[in-house]
Length: 388
Ligand code: PHB
Image (cartoon, rainbow, N blue to C red; front, side):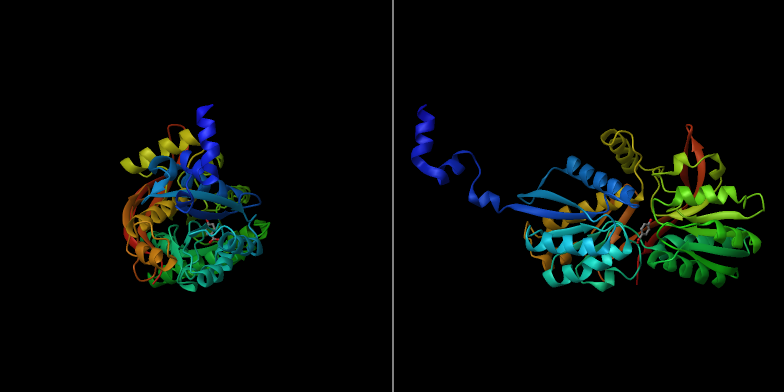
């Protein structure tokens, strides 16, 4: 009774103080606007990245340099016009200090001009076309690039008796990057790419392309499709019986995505891919990451998208620590340049000149471990740059 009277007499400002919600502390919130495909064909990317971001926050707290971190998640459904509209709203209405996410290359590219104009850092947690980061001085990448992840596959092929290859990729930025990197590296080492096939990104029907590849009788078929399409591609590869025809199936790790791999069947055992992350990566950091991720997400296995989110949040926290909580966008991007740490994927850094990711790339083989399919790493190419 007495307390209530006092509160009444000191008014609204006093009430806020008495309950600990001062006007000053309301300004101490740093908002992170996470734009992801939470529905539509790339929904698994959104789900994995959100889980990675939330795990980082659960393990590292929600206060950085005295500021409270608030996450705002928006679903762009995988449509670039939506990504751009949501980025604009997040900047103008919510006054976010960071934009982040971007599940596909066109979605990231659509946000670049918004980040540049608003001078707000935009952390790319998924998209992998090499040129994206150069399109805005406010882009920083914690995912991967396709040239980075592809070149080791071409090197391995040339060194392991493969002389002729047909490539089949999704017909957009990362696919074209992957095709180009494979051809340049493989032919530079004396191999021959017989044909470069490109399937549409949306609702792809792979059968005709796979038949064409089979008819060309290469030593190997190299594949790239974005996260979420690997299972349907590999089902059609199985139906065409390419392996029976003596054609080795190789690709980037996007195809043998940890999100889907275990359901793809034992026909994949022995498939070689190269990539920046495997849930089977053998390090104490990754063992802890996978265990915590499985526990927090009803046993969903983390894939490479999840670490893009986890490490993207790491970059955001580390930048704020460096600026001592200053949210000036230009200072935050400066602070991210040159950051280096050990991720669940292995050592990684943000190149101080390009703002792109430098990381190890691993050559892996699909194996059965404790009854489950995994990409087991057997060779490491250290510190590969994302772009030049
Ligand atoms: C992309 O659109 O840049 C992208 C998406 C998913 C991947 C790789 C690249 O697995």
